[in-house]
Image (cartoon, rainbow, N blue to C red; front, side, top):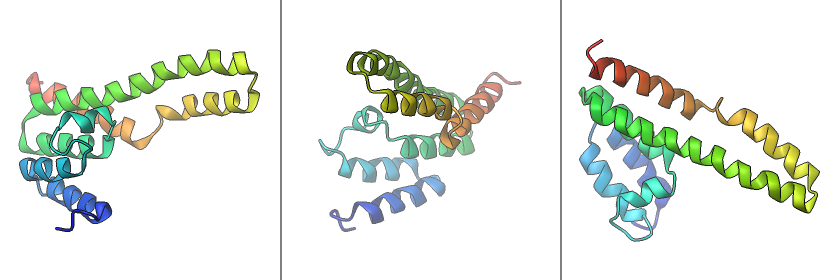
Length: 134
């Protein structure tokens, strides 16, 4: 594997996760983080494609508790993004940037209609229902 080609490596990690090789995908993907080996960097960087793909793999394996935990972690990214928008309100009003402010408001409307958010919500609900035995 060419460690300099991030696109090819990301694609190979996606295929590993699709074939439910979560441990191997985890070892491979951390090669490309800044500190090279810390799995928490992926969460800190809000790398939602990886987290969502690994969540779906856990779900397919029947590890519903871990899948639910990971789905909730991805949902927290959306909560963080929403919370960060509050800082931008005061900045736009202070600097009188109406175009940026309107763009931010449109982004806020779009945020929870994103496909990843819908996948996370559906996965979390399914994991919760199966983990609780319903």
